[in-house]
Length: 182
Length: 182
Image 1 (cartoon, rainbow over the protein chains, first blue to last red):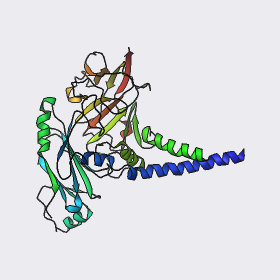
Image 2: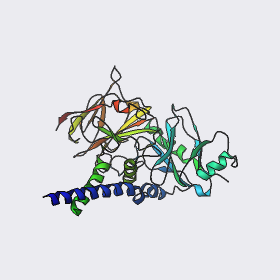
Image 3: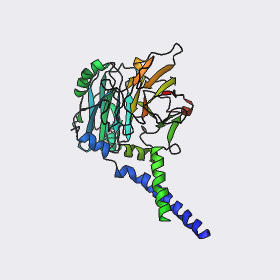
Image 4: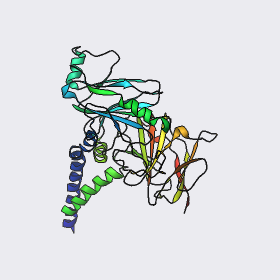
């Protein structure tokens, strides 16, 4: 009896170790699903408007059907990244993700009054150069420090009515992104 | 011993990333959210959840997303029933409510956007909301759903900082009340 209990206890301890290994290794094992899903849309150094699924359609990215989305993937090894453009007067937000889907930075335009997006994304080495004033950047650039070299910027824009969705998607498509000249 | 270890290890991992109420999920009534999902440095459980889901999560500045699988009495949400979403929502620029099937497919009426947007909400005189989710026509605010079987409700609060600080567990979300079933 005692021996059985000891075996079960040993199994539970081993199970705890397996559990920790699963939780800690999952991001490394599954880290390309979101990244590669958007990469297939051709979002490298280019703004792509994400197709928002309607009712009855698969929604692998979990997009909110009330919003419009634009995404751009940037390799910071080639230089600091940027996302810029003008957006309609409505609620919008921007988030920067790492390859595993972790949010590195996010912000909103708050009361829907800001219409200009001018975001610069810098890795740790570029941020150091920035601090040493060895990188020239435009005034008013919103500086984001990323701890990873592969980043993805996603802009969410909320149309006030569905009638203006196409116009808002056209505005998102006019955003530009890529690497700043170094 | 090996059997116990595998059951404990993988069973606990599955539980942590699906239910997860002891592993980092914020629960308010029937609503559950991974509160740290938009943080730049989430805990290991949230990081594993992000990797496993493969969806675009909101950054912490952009808002927070809750999911309800049951009504306020703990009964699974079923499409042949009428539900009343009753109460108030935390301060947010706006919120959306999306009914989805288990695989994430939208189940709202085809032809619409697939969601209910708070900017179109007719509020009660005291500012509270009363929104019906059902297959059959309902009074006041109505989100029409289609099909049969269980479903879940996704409530996304945009530009809400209510859940980012101390005391966020005291915030209120609307109740989900089952009215009648066909």
